[in-house]
Image 1 (cartoon, rainbow, N blue to C red):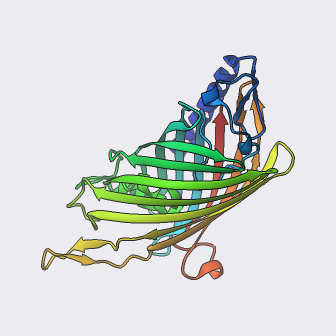
Image 2 (spheres, rainbow, N blue to C red; image 1 turned 180 degrees about the horizontal axis):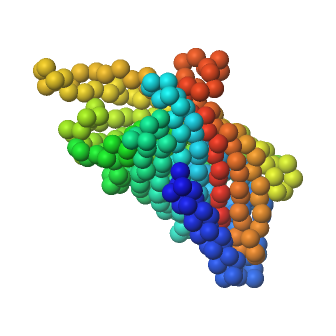
Length: 339
């Protein structure tokens, strides 16, 4: 956990330096509204901020519908019971950066670092997971905002291959439970193509956003590893976010994410060599997150939007499940800086 905390502190320092640099180089004609999106008195036509995104509530597990220059760090500390009923702890930290090319287009990149304190020191581990690169296309229609997203993971994460480091591999598996929304990044043996669409209504400080995502994963390494199952995976997800600003500098928001595997996992039979179905208790996953967010200006150009949320996973027992189950109970810290 010490290594993860050091990484988190370094990332926060980097965010502060970036925000200060953005403020120092800001033009005198630029201002920021409380939602952190660019608004200028004489902006280039390609980079003008849509007025319908005023006071947009950022989701916790869903993608933002806005394009812009941003650096965002998300860290979730989760506790849950492993398959043997023992208490497990995992910390996932994801750093995201995007750059606005035009008013509609912004490429994005995500890097993930995870750590796991399992019951037994031999199973503790750290891992750098698959990076993700992609782009967002955004379009506004009055108070409605549409965003199309496409991305792919790069299968270079640690803990993969035919002879993976056991601690790193266990860490990757625990991280899926800790933060299911980023499962594609933790599947280090797979190259995953992701396409998605988001539609948000933003007006009078209120945000209602829906999201749909489809993921197609192809195994590119680790065919003979002990945990190798299916060569292809097809996953889907739908989500809903609701948020509301109370004044200009404080907002509350919550979202629900439902994920379902569209392909059933298989494995090679030792007896016949043929692929046979395997049981999977995580064919359906539901996670909910809710919490407050603050909105502060950094100089003349940048805004920071720190927030904290409680993330709770649910299994087949629904709301009646014990606090610690095979699903996650996590506290997430989210710090986006927009400049």
